[in-house]
Length: 96
Image (cartoon, rainbow, N blue to C red; front, side):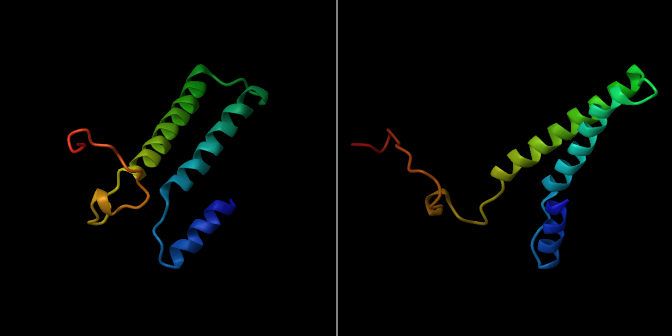
């Protein structure tokens, strides 16, 4: 819950919204529901169990794609040589 509030505060201050926070919260809700299914008074059907498991799998995939996609964002016009955070690479074609 604190992450959602922090995300909203950052958004109000002009920052972009991080969708992965909302997917994380939804994933926690789905997993909590799956954990609670066996202890309910009414036994869940296979359809309900499959539905909740499928939702968890799709949210997990969405979260993974959001995190991986963050690495592949455009650099804003900077070339690879301008990025200080990248480790130096050895190019055998230019080594003498």
